[in-house]
Length: 321
View 1 (spheres, rainbow, N blue to C red):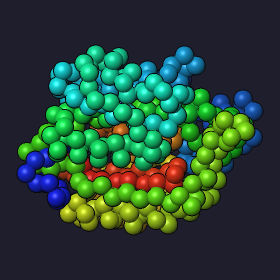
View 2 (view 1 turned 180 degrees about the horizontal axis):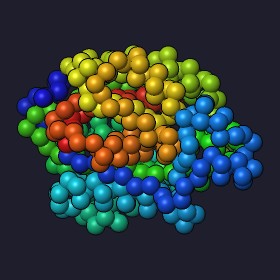
View 3 (view 1 turned 135 degrees about the vertical axis):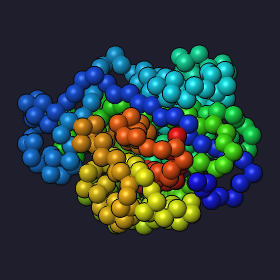
View 4 (view 1 turned 135 degrees about the horizontal axis):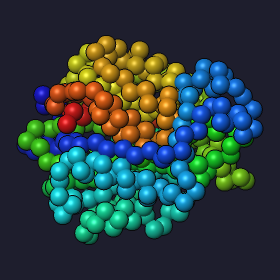
């Protein structure tokens, strides 16, 4: 199956997915025992989350990105010397300089690749995947490593009911390569800057804060139609999708978008239940875990859609590896 698009003489395709999660599991009961003012049922009812992963204090964002990248590269069988570009999507880097992608490339032993970081928060991975595909289509790169990695525990107020029960740490990755037919569909993207403050870093505390109701209303009222538009531009009907991999924001949001999409035959990624919201890492991590446990034939359409802080969104259809 080939995806529709303007560039049909050449193509790009995701050839492998990978992921990494820290070893420390933080359950709802663990949060409550530590003084979080809530209970397990309240958290599960509003978010769908039962547990999340948290990195060690000495485990950095680049550490997690490296492990996810190694997983994807090993599965891709692409030689390190043939990776020409590294893109890392994140919104939780402790320092903007030096950039995380260059550090990651050095850790992996990739010699002198192009590298840059992308910050589109929860939509960062889908923006980065589109940029990687474009780099291949225009001849800039043969193979591109794309990683989404987040360490929210560096930015968390563990007493904040709007964030502490939701956000978590982890990383996901993909390797894109040249393909005889297009395997990455057109990007559909946009933003709502009027509501940018709905998810923010509080200037007084330097901790993440959000207006959850604003985000919930925005996502449930608009992302279903965006998902349908992504399918339309790719030339794929919703009932042809084998996987729907949305950003893991909230289980109620995921199921609302899935219902509007009407992808009756698709496996829906619901990794948020045991991983929490890992922003730019959530799509590749959740999809990598799903593909590891389900047998899916190559060349079938999967819908990715990221949305969140900004407020911004981006989605595309990609073919299964």
